[in-house]
Image (cartoon, rainbow, N blue to C red; front, side, top):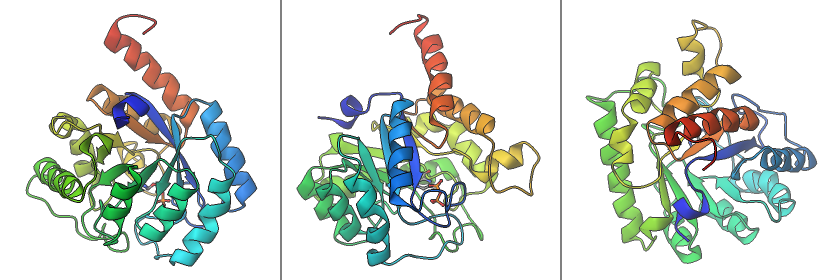
Length: 274
Ligand code: HH2
C-alpha cells in the first residue's frame, strides 16, 4: 500500500528514544518495559506510528556500535507487536532486525548514505523509508552550516536521494522525505525550510517534519540558554508545517500535537467532521 494511504495526512509520528543521551528525553526510556509502555501510550493518544531510536543524533552525539544499538531496540520492538513502528537508524543490520520484528518504516537520517547495504535491504523487504536531509554528520553538523539557498539545496538533495532509492529498486510510492530540521542548519534556515515547505511538497512525496522540542524553538522565544523547545512552541510549529503541506509530524508530545493539527485540518476543510 502506498505510504500516503497507510499513513495519511496528517499523521503524528510519536518519538521513543531508547537512548541515554537524546537531547530532549535521553535516559527516560532505557528500560525496555518503560519504552514499550510509553510507545503504547503514544498510540493510545493517537500516534499513527512510533519512531523507535537507539542512537542519538543530537549535535555532538557519539556514534553507537551495531551491538549496542541492537541491545537497546530489540526488546522494545519485540514488545510492540501490533503497533505501527518506524525504526530510526542508519545501520542496515539494525534496520534488518527491526523489520524482522515487524517495523514497517526505516527512518534513515543519512538518506541511504550511511550504510551501503541499506537501500538493497529496504528494497528487498518492500519497507517504507524516510529519506532525510543532513549537511555534515551529527558530531560536527552544527559547527558551520553553509548554503546559498537552503530550500533549493535541500530540495535538490531530496530529489537526488529519491532517484537513487528508486534506482536501487525501492518503489517511489513507499518513500517519504524530510528536510531534517536541525541537521546542519541554523535556526533561520530551519524556519525558512518550514516557511517555504511548498517547494519540498512539490517534489510529490509525503513530507515529514520533525521540529518537536528542537532548540530553534527556544531561540524564537528568546531563551538562548536552553537546548529544548517548549511543548507549546513545538505544537505551534507543527501546525505551521501542516498548513504548508507536511503529511507526517514527528512529535514527542503526541496528544497536544494531534489536537492542534485536528483543528488546523478542520479549518482547512471548513467542516467539523471529515
Ligand atoms: N530528528 C531527530 C531524530 N530523528 N528523524 C527524522 N526523520 N526527522 C527528524 O527531524 C529527526 C529524526 C532528533 O530528535 P530526537 O529523536 O528527539 O533526538 P535524538 O536524535 O537526540 O535522539
